[in-house]
Length: 198
Image 1 (spheres, helix red, strand yellow):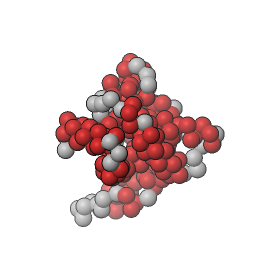
Image 2 (image 1 turned 90 degrees about the vertical axis):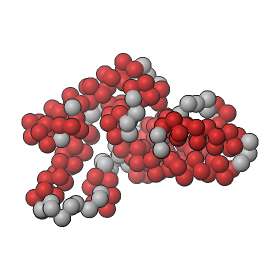
Image 3 (image 1 turned 45 degrees about the horizontal axis):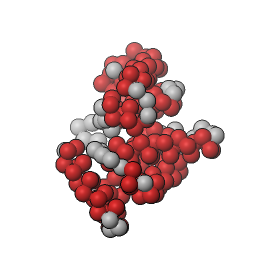
């Protein structure tokens, strides 16, 4: 489903939910719960925080449906979840114990083609581990911007709206974060994951 069709569907469901139809809001939850958890986990690197933030985001969205003015419910919900996750981390005032657990757990990844030998699989795992370590070294703001842009596909303007900063600040965070990732990954990392960090 393209973004315009998604926006139209969501707007209709929001209107129904505003009229008291809980099943319409439940459809929005079903449409976005997996996306929201995956995105939030990449930003905060802590499963418990991601789960709590997603739950808080849906509660907050439901309580504040009258404040949604469009056009993108997805972007509005993303902003709420990112803010909730950062609030939870600030309250806990600690670094997560398991950075990027989804990159260390093979169950989330599709099976490797049979043409890939053990060397290729090992190299891919090493690359993911290197990226995860380097993502730990950049700021929360840079990581959020990079995940929203490179992983989730939001444009600069959408990220600015989600994070509450200017478009120039978003571009700067992405640029500086990518430079830091490139430095961290070194020459070998530039060759193997150049598309991800340039």
